[in-house]
Length: 445
Image 1 (cartoon, rainbow, N blue to C red):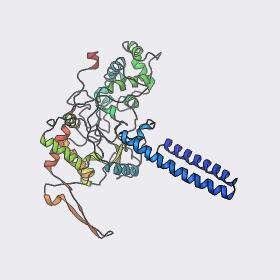
Image 2 (image 1 turned 120 degrees about the horizontal axis):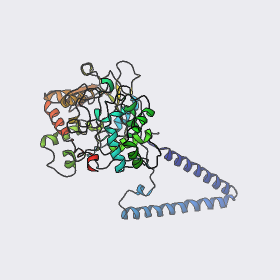
Image 3 (image 1 turned 30 degrees about the vertical axis):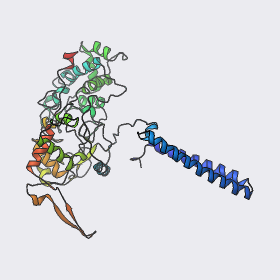
Image 4 (image 1 turned 90 degrees about the vertical axis):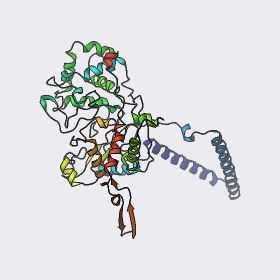
């Protein structure tokens, strides 16, 4: 029930029921004081009066709807919903995914502005400070690694590092691929397993990770920052309400800078905004295949992710959702299970849905960086997520099967995906390369 109604809806329903019961008891009490004849006359009067009022209200609503084109429910006050960051179980994720699949897809361009929390408004001073911290190697235990080490801010790397697994202090290699920092501000949960609910929370994680930046505690991070003469005056300008440098302010500054790292104005964005020439015929075909094959069930909305702030469904999906021993062995797809770590050895993983923005720039792919090319990634997703077969043969494009319980034949159509279709989808994904932020905030302010 909580999936459909908020706590405010339930409270309002309970209040209405209680008020109705009170009114009913009051009416019963009044009727009992009347004579039988007067009671009958009173009930007929109430019934007749109620009918007249109902008819009058119906006429009133007809008139109102004829003059007011917007939905009438928009007159009611709307409470702002908090971002859904619950870590659901596998069964709930799959049910929400099925619900999402029933919704009509909606192609949307990426906004030029990102949502900003009330307790961390964007300011030039804060963004400038955040960029300095983002590139500062001194925030790592051996002074060799910064945020930018794993999230390169250039066109070639697309906000990642180009490595299969991220490399941290002392040359240690992590178990997961570094996700892109571009457009991360549009995601409602961060990291591959979605364990951070904001950019501020995410910013502190790598600092304390023993493999990534290796700082022993937040107090040590604050000391590293405070010992550099350039930082105290910058913190005073960025956070005039703080008397001293705090770890929370470090996180807020880095998050403020990361909220400037968005990449709108891709060829796809121009196409859906009305420029019919922005996509090639092959890319348009790939866009249609992306929709008809079911890719949008998970990679939806302006940021092409069900984990984005635009989505109303679960931020997580099972992967692989369909068993494929060959791919699982070759690419180690189930060795790491994300949120589903406690499951049995060969169980499926549970992961946050990544954005596909700039995906053509962020190879290698998947949580473990095991797949080198985007073409192979598309083939794997078509097979283990969408139950497609890889074939150029027309006879493989449909499957006839008998349902003995229903005594009926069924035909599964569009079952095959050809090399030509893979190439078209990849061409479309390349159209999601946006306009990267120009230059440095430090250089322009």
